[in-house]
Amino acid sequence: MTSHPDLDLARDLAADLASARFRSEALRAMWGVAADDAIGRSLRAPALRAIRDRDDALAVLARVLIFGVAQPTADVDRALPRVGARGLVDLGLAALDGDIVTPRAVLRPQSFHDDRGPGEWLLASDLDEIALGGGALAEDHVLGAGGASLTLAGLQLPTPAASVLDLGTGCGVQALRACRYADRVVATDISARALRFTDLNAALAGTDAIETRRGSLFEPVAGETFERIVSNPPFVITPRVQGVPEYEYRDGGLVGDALMQSVVEGVGSHLAPGGVAQFLGNWETRDGVDGLDRLRGWVESAGVPLDAWVVEREELDPIAYAEMWIRDGGTVPGSPEHDRLLDTWLEDFAERQVSAIGFGYVLLRRAESAPTLARYEEVTHSIPSEGALGSHLAAVLAAHDRVAALDDDALLALHLKTAADVTESRHHLPGAADPSVIELRQGGGFGRSVQADPALAALVGASDGELSLGQIVAALAQLLEVDEGALRAALLPSVRELVLDGFLAPA
Image 1 (cartoon, rainbow, N blue to C red):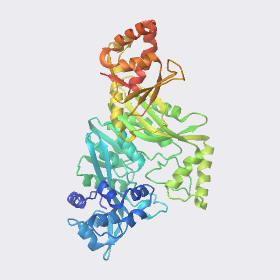
Image 2 (image 1 turned 90 degrees about the horizontal axis):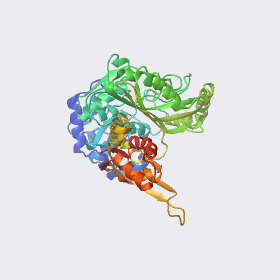
Image 3 (image 1 turned 180 degrees about the vertical axis):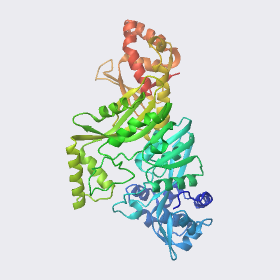
Image 4 (image 1 turned 45 degrees about the vertical axis):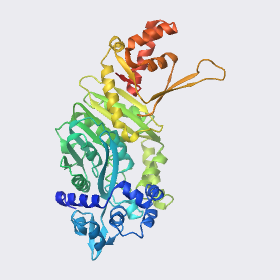
């Protein structure tokens, strides 16, 4: 695969694939729902069985590009009339062995949906567990679109940006997502193979807005700033001892969570004022200090003022964490090699007194002066729109910025509106006239639920943009026969919190 693929050849390949209806929907229809679910569990046999009697273009391309199954050259030539089998070779996706085309990479459609509507990328990456039929991956393996990368793509703020840095781009998923709203994207990676795949995927997408640069962390962009930085860095915590595989796509090469610390402490100097960085990561609870508290310390020592919103999605004990990532590398549980690696990982955690490892999302913003946002929270429940949280984050940040700048008197003059996805549930004890619990629920966003007293619930119910917050509070004080000043003092902190949660927003 050349460093800069032939753009004309890549466009011709994209056109051939479009003519063959090489798209997610058509492929699922070809092999069926059950087989498609099995693919999600890394099982290719049901899908291959479903298409074994077909020799049309879609079936041939599915076998060679999705499942890594060698195909006759003549069949591939018919399926790709513009580029043929030779074109796959020239693009680094296959090799020719006589009259057989042998896959050297996978190329799969990946559908998505954002503020601009539905879309689909064609993503090339290294042969994976599905195509290889199992076994350990190569240490320089370039991953395709995994669950984490798609989650981060959905988290990206969809608001316009002149420049975006994709730090540790892999096969280029985040860079392609950024092209949906950005004028220019710089994609960096320590892996030359990853950058070659990013170049190809950009060419297949028909975009020339992505510039690739090789290097570690912020070295390739020294002295530069960006309006947006996005990163799915190699954050996996792996023992740094001989005999433990180090995968470029996931292992940062540093002890413990030191790579995450380097990203957090270094990202601010590469953000333009008001610029936002978003990334995924792991952090350790170590020596009795909670992981979120350690991350807060990194943010506060970054050297520039940073707003922070950190969401911890899960926390694993060292055994569960080690098992997950050893299995991710293709080592079978119960095997002697698995037991050896597990013992090595647990010894590493024990030496550093690590009791838990957190995973989650990090959003940092370079503040104009003093930070106004420092939110570190655990959100472990199911999120209804995790794949499209970017719009929610953008709206909530905008609402927070408007409200955070206001003192209480100015806030009371504001007209607020309850979000359209908010519902209310009231729970009564048998025979009771008044509810024992009032719950406000969010149908989108993070799917939060908030317990409210009658006054707060009434305030949310009355917030339709017509009356100011002060008018609503005054009316409630009269209705409930309580002191207006005391009610105001009780409600305003909750109102600010509901704005940050996305329940309320300036009308």
